[in-house]
Length: 118
Image 1 (spheres, one colour):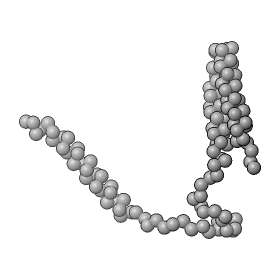
Image 2 (cartoon, rainbow, N blue to C red):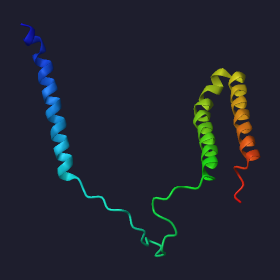
Image 3 (cartoon, helix red, strand yellow):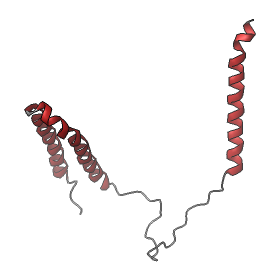
Image 4 (tube, rainbow, N blue to C red):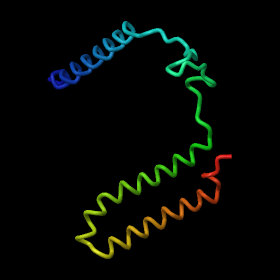
């Protein structure tokens, strides 16, 4: 009687293990041999100056953060335009407070030299 209660669990476990084994075998069959990337001319025809998988310079990260801040600003401003007619002045005050905080962040980035390219 006890074994009958565990029979569906054992069946499900067996099906799952067989499925994982078959997926592993399928992966081994269709696996491609990876070769290292070689730098060669592409559409411009010039030899590349750096490796195709090189990292970006660290000076791009502050620019990326500033872009994301303005991207979030636009994400919040679209629904805000729908809320302003219903809520009124408090919604306008909240948005200007949000824009003030964003402007303070841009001022900080400017002061730290995120916009200098030399």
